[in-house]
Image 1 (cartoon, rainbow, N blue to C red):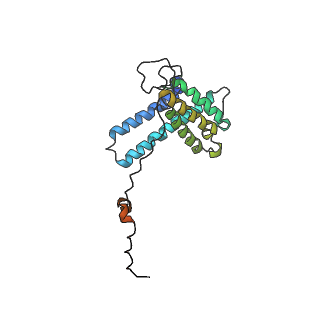
Image 2: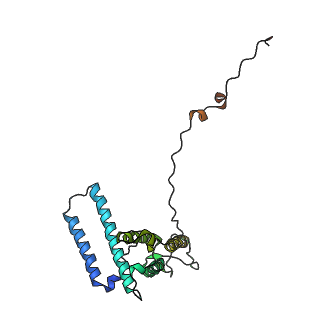
Image 3: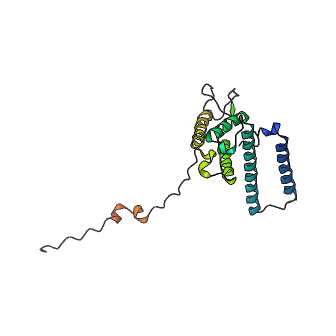
Length: 209
C-alpha cells in the first residue's frame, strides 16, 4: 500500500523535512539493534508508534500543501473541496495501474502485457490516509463537526474511487463475510416423522358409549 511518505512532495524541495524523516529512521534502527527480543506488548506499541509516526508525517505534508497552495490556505479555511484537490494532486505520485475503458485489459486482474494506462493512488491508500488525517485534525484541536476530512464530498469521492478501480482492475474491495458455524440440528428434527406425532389412541371396545 502506498504511504503518504512515499509520494511526499516535500522530499524534493524541503530539506528540513528530509532531515526529520532521516532522524526518525536512524533512531528507530538504532533502537531496534540494541533492543532485546520484542514481547507481544512491545510489538503492539511498535505498531502504534509506526501509525503515529505516519500520521504525523501525513499531517505535516498536508500542512505544507496548504502553505504551497495559491493563494495559501489556513487550516481554519480548509474545506472538503480542498481535501479533494489534495487527493487528486497525490494521484501523480501513485503506483497503481488503473485501466481505462478503452484498454483491452479493462477489468483484467492480471494483465498479460504492459499498457499505457495511468498510475493512480490505490483506493486503500487514500482511505487509510484520510483516516489518519481525520484523526490528526481533531487531535490538533479541530471540532469533529468541522472536520474537512470527514466531509460528505470526501466520503463520496472515496466511494467513487473504490468502485471505479474495482471495475478497472477486475478486483473486489468488498469485505468478506465471516461464515457462520453450521447450527447443530436438534434432536426433534433428526427424528422420523412418526416419532414426532402423538401416539394413536387404541380403538374403543364394542358396546362402549
